[in-house]
Image (cartoon, rainbow, N blue to C red; front, side, top):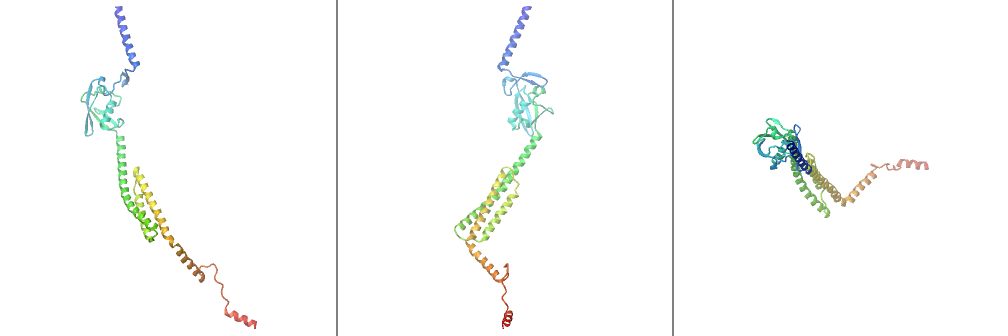
Length: 274
């Protein structure tokens, strides 16, 4: 009897030693399950982790058949569903028998069996963020389309500015109204750009077009000055002539011309002289 007890004790010690060696080697990984139960960690998709079960997951109008190990957690199920649905794990809510389940809860402990039904819902906060992002993207797309229309008009005006520049640099004179008309048309497009509400990429595109318009307006101002420069001397001459005429008439001068001596006074002086 004593020998049998000694043999069983030795067997248990040997078994415990093998388990300890496996833990030291890293062959066995442990995890703490709900309720304080310490169990061997199992990986999803590992056939050696236990029997597989098929779960029917309902996601709105979509249905997914997901195969996972029977002893997986709801968090493991979420990771598989993330690949199927594109929803991140933090965006998922899993309901079984009308109750939402935590990621750490085990499927078999919750009563999930083969062909059980689980409901997948998208987190409301995540859904709202996606809707806001979708609206923002639609707004950016609409703004880009409006900017594209303005860009087309600016391209046409740009061609006219280039043609006008070639004429002026060639030495020919252009009427001033040509510069004024082009400048006004460019300012209309600038106002149109100002009415477009743009964010992100659309805001960058709008800034580029505003810079183009401002550059064309500056070019037209320089061309207008150059177009008028050959006649600057004649203009100055006309201006100076007007000033001289004004001076001769006594208008606008600081001091009026000195009055001539009257004939009466001269006569009186001669009478005195006599």
